[in-house]
Length: 142
Image (tube, rainbow, N blue to C red; front, side):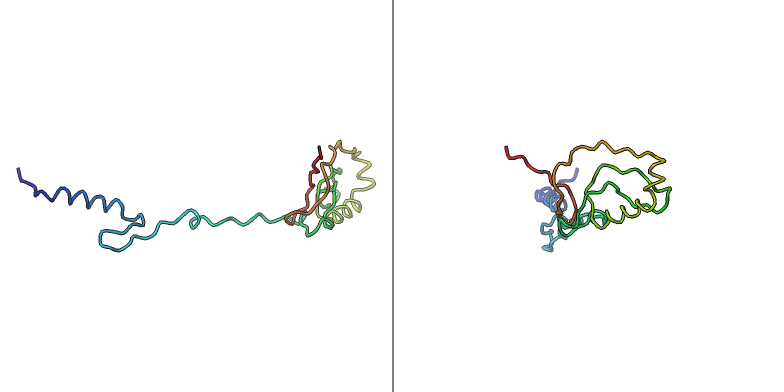
């Protein structure tokens, strides 16, 4: 059997260790640095906040209203009974109200016997926060 030189085994172990570390941002055996590893911040950009739908968009609390008519009506087949009030953009609410009154109020409403919905009490007041109309829950001072 052939005899190994006494320095060969340690040299082999060092070369294996260097190869295992290559690519981890540590200097390679030849003195050149390996390419940097991307961090989580670099790999995944922060997602943009979701766009506020036009029906909820506002710049001030005066831009908001309560609406029982959440969608527009273009034809009698689009008619629906009013729902529980929801916060919405005041201009969008006015447009939905106008289209519903023009097409659904009167004969359609009587034929379909829309009953007043059993709605829970509103939890607070209307406000515009982060460009979105919402009901602000009022805190009890207890």
